[in-house]
Image 1 (cartoon, rainbow, N blue to C red):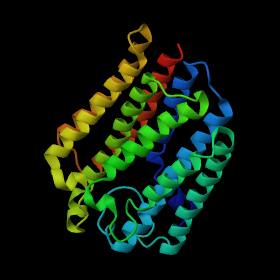
Image 2: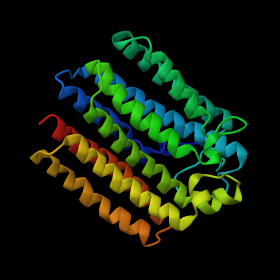
Image 3: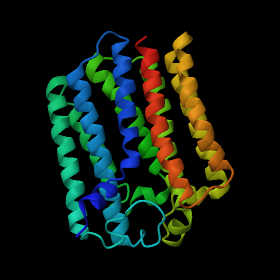
Image 4: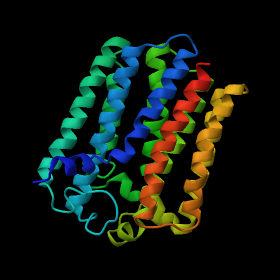
Length: 288
């Protein structure tokens, strides 16, 4: 039986700060149009957090039963390390998705029932990232899923359910947040290249190789912060983005100098915090 602490660690809390970033930016984009709605913003945040937890448990289950997690450096793997029964982890994923769906239905009741289709697509995509007979995460498309659902959909969706429209600031903010959240997955997969290659998990990092994956990570971080600066526009508040830009430098430096294994856990956690920090700075600039 896994302990409560191990279940919490299995949810991979280092990735969770980034879940709030798209909601923060989307809500700020709605606010600058004069349409901030706190209950809808809170429901969007609950959906985002629970989907992230669900994805993490689903990955733990699917990778664990495939044997992909036998040789890993990083957070607790409940199934791979034999800490919990696979079906228990699968149920935890299902419960997380169900709770996310419940919050999503409540949001749909306020903003439009079409949101149920978007939420269903997100849950299906989350499960088949590593689940099913041909998981697309094993084919190198994981970053695309993250960019689309945790970046574009989460950010512009949050703006739309509050403002009833999407503007250029919301779209640019969605791109920036999507790129930063994708960088989290790139850092994770960079760390796991040796084990993934042995397990025939052909992530984008495995396909690109170590050096090009490090360049990709750095490019995503730089482009993400730049896109958020475009979202804020040419005003003094854009200078706030110098704070996350400064926080990004040690992460890029550690990645490009060749940090590997457990040292990349710091980069992974730092990138999650960077996404949240950049989201807060962008929000401040948008609601100036």
